[in-house]
Image 1: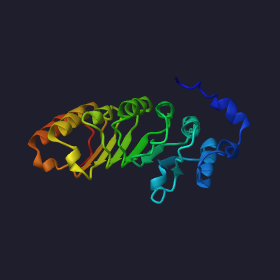
Image 2 (image 1 turned 60 degrees about the vertical axis):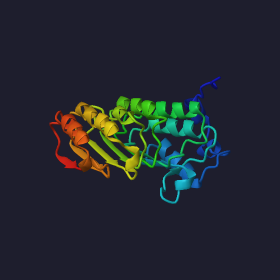
Image 3 (image 1 turned 90 degrees about the horizontal axis):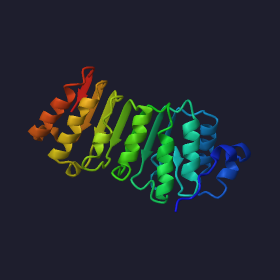
Image 4 (image 1 turned 120 degrees about the horizontal axis):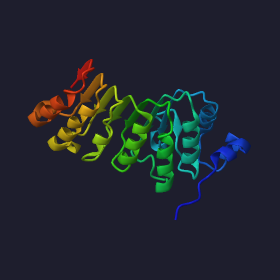
Length: 228
C-alpha cells in the first residue's frame, strides 16, 4: 500500500531546513544545497551516493526517509536550475520504489532544466520513467558516461529536443551490434541535433552499426560536430 502524499508546500511554510534535515544522515553541505535550492540560487546540481562523495562535491544522498521528496520539491520550484546530474550506480539503493517514482515525477516538472549528466549509473531500472521526465521538460543536452541502459533503453532518450548527445562507454561488452543499431536508428527523431560524441563504442568494427548510424543521422540536418 502506498503512503499518503506529503504536502511539501504546507510543510515548507512552517519548517526550517535544519528541522527538515534533523533526522537525516545529511552532511552540512546537503543542508546548504537544500537552502540554496529553496532560495533559487543554483543553476546546476550534481547528486551522488555516499560512496562517491570524494569525487562529487554537490548533494550527497544519505538514504533518509523524505530526502528525495524534499529534494524533488525544491528542484521543481526552481526557476534557475538549468543542469542536473547523477553519479553513482547505487544512488537509489536505500529508497523505496514509491520515493524514486515521486522524485522522477518531480524531475519531469523541472521546466528550466535543459542539460542532464549521468555517470556510472544503471539506468535500465528507471529508463522508462526517466525518459518520460526528460521528454516533458524537453532536454537539449545529454551526457552519459559509463552508464548501463539496457538493450532498448537508449531509444527512450533520443528525442526531438536533443541538440547535443555525448555517450562514453568503458565496457564495450555491454553493447552489441543489434543494440547499437537500434539506438542509432532512433537518432532520426533528433532533427535538431547539432553535436554528437560517441566514444569507446568500437563503431569502426561494425558495418551494421555504422549503417544504422548513417540512417539515423540522415534526418539530423543541423549537425555541426560529429566525433566517433
